[in-house]
Image (cartoon, rainbow, N blue to C red):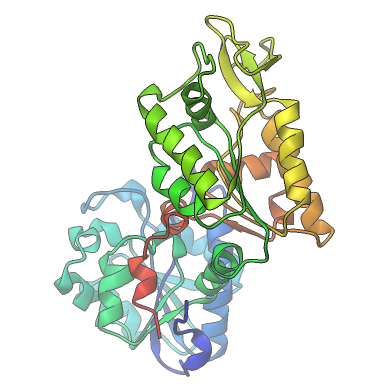
Amino acid sequence: MNFRTLDQIDPDAKRVLVRVDFNVPMEHGAVSDDTRLRAAASTINLLREKGAKVILLAHFDRPHGKRVPSMSLEPLAEPLSRLLRTPVAFADDCIGASAERAVSEMARGEVLLLENLRFHPGEEANDPLFAKALAMNGDIFVNDAFSAAHRAHASTEGIAHLLPAYAGEAMRREVGALDVVLGNPRRPVLGIVGGSKISTKLSILRHLIARLDKLAIGGGMANTFLFAQGWEVAASYCEKNLSDAARQLIGMAEDERCELLLPVDIVVAERAAAGVAARTRGLGEVDEGERILDAGPETVARLTSAMDQVETLVWNGPLGVFETPPFDRGTTAAARHAAALVRAGKLIAVAGGGDTVAALNRAGVAQDFTFVSTAGGAFLEWLEGRSLPGLAVLQA
């Protein structure tokens, strides 16, 4: 996508409103994971170095248009100050007198964090009046929150029609990485789609089958495919009502010449709990009361062999119940093999989605992948091929 970027502007002495993703994990009132703060640092520092007055717009949690003290962004100002090595001021509202006063007191190179956008119902409603109130405090708008780009909110879409609008550095990196795997990839391309429900990823699967050379299905959704082919799944999670949809996808893969990699063996147990007896079985060899909880070793070996044969990998969703050992073995083995190929310069690997990121972190390889997206809904909608409103308005 051709969109406007920061190298096209001179922000010196300008008030630059930067939409960031600071919806970070918190424990006991403190930030427990500053990944998203660090992701925003490059844009903030670039603008500061060029003399901009950097005004940060963000949301936290779901206050549903009401002021909820426990969802204030104020606790983020101090860790952000440490990260940037410069003071970060805080205003107790994102519009109105307090925000205007705080902005008016800024000098070149200073940083101001405004209060939670979602304290106002106009944010999620994309209210033109709320967008106008936000825009009054800026000369330039920069969207650096890919994770919020799938929402047509006032701070992601509405404001971009009122001010000159550009993509930030984190947004540029993320969209560039995604373009590498689906927009203009090095072929062959392998996709891995896991998770529990086929119903939530039907559009993704259709979109990917038409664009990939190989597609591996894992997690609970693989059970629906197995059931659709006539295999016994016993007490496993399975959307049996979507058997026809699964068979249609199998037929679509044949038509599109996309090799569909379904499980060839499975790991079962009576329940997903640490320390239970796990057994490797062939397809259909599931006793009453047993559940399929992970991909078997032959399935994983087939998947890693497929990785050896491709140039590019896009991954969303684990292969099994990775949160509970020993049912993390399949996902961990596949993740470590992909990471080794990336380190050897033999594979471009991009992954995204909350469970996927957690699984890669658990395997200790997230830092080895070419790119790991922390975006949830935006990453999934991108996999579906849908236009993201917050990105579309930045197109040149």
